[in-house]
Figure 1 (cartoon, rainbow, N blue to C red):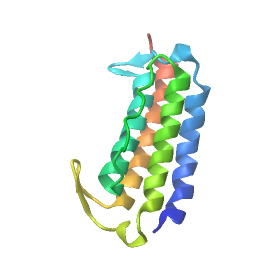
Figure 2 (cartoon, rainbow, N blue to C red; figure 1 turned 90 degrees about the horizontal axis):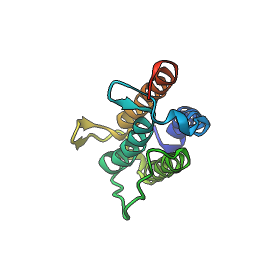
Figure 3 (cartoon, rainbow, N blue to C red; figure 1 turned 45 degrees about the horizontal axis):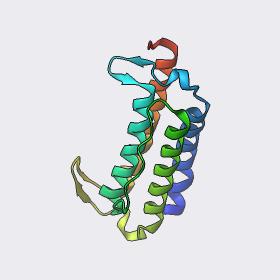
Figure 4 (tube, rainbow, N blue to C red; figure 1 turned 90 degrees about the vertical axis):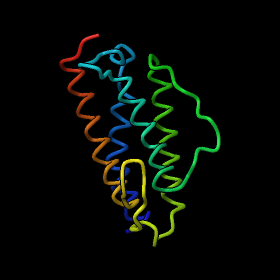
Length: 139
């Protein structure tokens, strides 16, 4: 499995998440259930994409990224856009034979292909949490 095979699947999931984030009103960012707020879930999603680009695709952040305000949807959406672009760049640079090579990471051994599967699941979980918080959360 290569970048050209994985990318359309990743994009179908990630684009939907991005559209959900883009449509959120600023007022919803502080809604939460338990310890999770919508803004923290958006920020966390981007951070994990940067982390996976480093851990599984060997792309370290060359420069410090600007941390978004957790109270500004435009900044959070920009952060998500940047993290997705960064991850896609890392995926594109990975050699075909490396997609199924096991890599030791802080979360244990995994291949880059498995890591993208985990990211797809991760993104879907947080999309569901955001929807649940919008329906049942409180500020």
